[in-house]
Picture 1 (cartoon, rainbow, N blue to C red):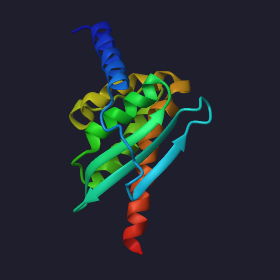
Picture 2 (picture 1 turned 45 degrees about the vertical axis):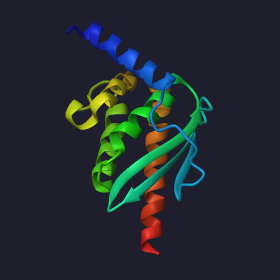
Picture 3 (picture 1 turned 180 degrees about the horizontal axis):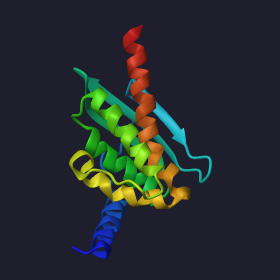
Amino acid sequence: MSSADLQTLYQELILDHSRTPEGRGDTSGLAHRSHQINPTCGDEITLGVELGAGRVISITWEGEGCAISQASASLLSELATGLEVPVLHERIERFREVLRSRGREELDPELFGDAVALGGVSRYLARVKCAMLGWVALEHALESAEGAGRS
C-alpha cells in the first residue's frame, strides 16, 4: 500500500468516525466527567468515564465540532475501553507527544489501533488541539476519579 493510499484510508476512517461515532451519548449520569472547549475554534466535548477494578469500563461523550475532534473522541472511546488506568495515562501522554512532534514521530499501531489515523494531524498545528480535545477531557475525568478515590 502506497503512502497516498494509506493517507486516503486514514481520511476515510476519520470521516466514518465523525459521521457514526463510537461512545457518543448522554454523560449526565456519569460521576467522573470533564467538559473541554477548544478556544481557537469553539469545538466542545463533554466526556464521562466509568471505571471498575482499575480499568475503563466505558467512555461516553457528547460534543460538537469539526470532523477531527469528533472522530478523535470516537477513536479514543474504542481504544480506551478495557485498558488499565495507568496504561491509559501512558497512551494519552504518548498521543500528546506525537501530536506535538510536527510530523517527526508516529503513533504505534500496536498501541493505538485505528487511532493511528490521527497521527497525520501533527503536521497541522491548528488541528492538534481539535484532536487532543477528547483525550484531555478523558485525562481530566480520570484525575477526577483518582481524586475521589483519595478522599
